[in-house]
Length: 79
Image (cartoon, rainbow, N blue to C red; front, top):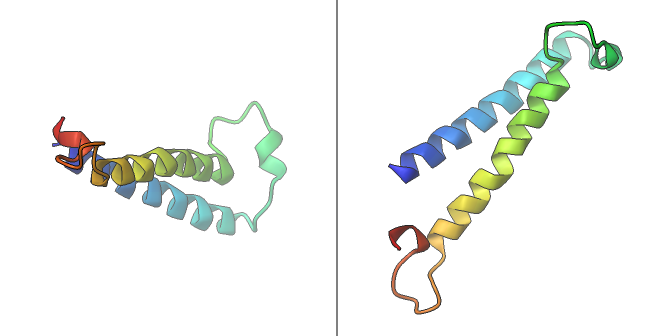
């Protein structure tokens, strides 16, 4: 189950990054709407930041799950 959640988080993070880049392209890579506080829509850069924020811990968790504990017996997830 943990592995499935990791893959879902990985997919979500890549989807958010892709959406952020494509949506930012639609507004010609402008940063002017980034400083508007009154808008209800997220700026594509913020969506990309959320995607990148999810990506780092997910990949770190994948690497940690693949590494072995100090006795080299079982992966960390099995403990």
